[in-house]
Image 1: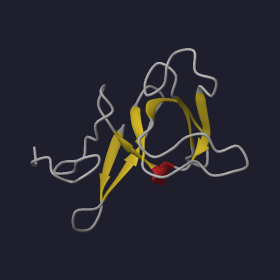
Image 2: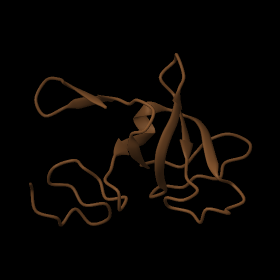
Image 3: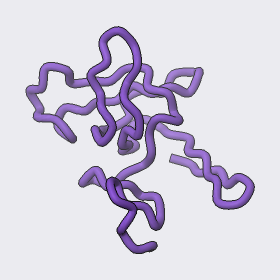
Length: 101
């Protein structure tokens, strides 16, 4: 993953296969199965920047029925650690109570 700094505190993330990410918004489309808080590993980055994620073995059991989320827009995810907690400094996954790193 590479981070590009913007104006002020804004950051843009360029994800690569193998990066761990957490969903911020629900998956869209006719078969929406991924919900905010689900997390997994990036399997593929499409030329348009959307991501294919593997959720099974991460936020879902290894034998989950819907093991992947396909074509998730890059803006709908954030980087996370191996426990699914966001890496953004000063931000908590639910209540914004974690102290800044």
